[in-house]
Length: 180
Image (tube, rainbow, N blue to C red):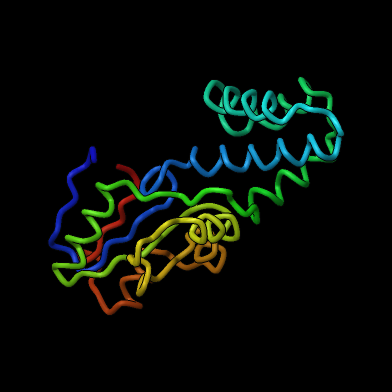
């Protein structure tokens, strides 16, 4: 863990991506699923090469470059972008997303002190919910609430003050961990 987290709060809010697990772990599995879909649909043996290309493009140029560059290189239909989008939001991952040991230890120490843990995440709520479904929580999710920044902001609600109020806390009694 690269960041010191104070253990004197009553509520700890965690972002998902690149805090509880590397976002890359989710994306690479979606790329794998998409490559399998394209190979099946096109009837061409290309899944392994496609997923490797998508991974390399993601690492070199970022998430936004992956689909257009893959479509161009592998000459598949731009119509597949809708399928890629659906997989991003609803894809059933072949492997669970694993919480790092440092996070599990942090969760255990937070709960041991009688504090609560919640998720406060930014991004498409349906996609973030899909990620949550695929995390191996090892029981840490039993009483965990989830808040979606985009959903709250859409309703013109300031997330931190809303969450503090809902939990009958002062804002100083909670912390939002959005990076590690």
